[in-house]
Length: 261
Image (cartoon, rainbow, N blue to C red):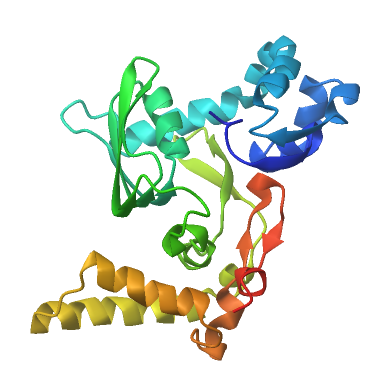
């Protein structure tokens, strides 16, 4: 599952950027010659798995503290409650994180997404991950769905003040310690992003109070305008549109420049 999404670079970059391993951990588990190999995922998925297979025991040893802490965190968060099926909310698209958590938790899960490229029930290690899309289902990249093709704009805004979490450890007192990746502009100026969030919430409250509703088509049409027309996004918030895309090997990405808006 972890090798199924886009990535281009060396095996060293793959271990460092996608899996969040530190250099000393990588060199302890994998031979130097292998780390120099280049790959393009998902095209080389089977080849990379073949390269890594002889070293899985060493990799398991490296990630064991993280896995133990993650499972403990998920259990403390209530996701192991047998009376409740976990519901995960995300922007999209193929449910990779949900499927990985389904595998780790060893139980059925449901995921609700803005866009689900492959909706429905997916079997994961004898359990099931159900994916549902709110605005779009069953659409593909570059098939004319602007909310998907330009969803990087969403990715920039729907972020946390600390950025991406890359590791977790459980301390001796049972509490957790979190480690984060590098900050993008949205983290450095999170007070501005919070103002955007507050305005969005105020608008929802106003709509509820006055009986104003938006259809899926209304939301799609509004997004089409902001995501494709130059200068429709106010200049005062342009600095919020950058995102850490290290997990695919691309570093910090600016969708305003990428989409020429």
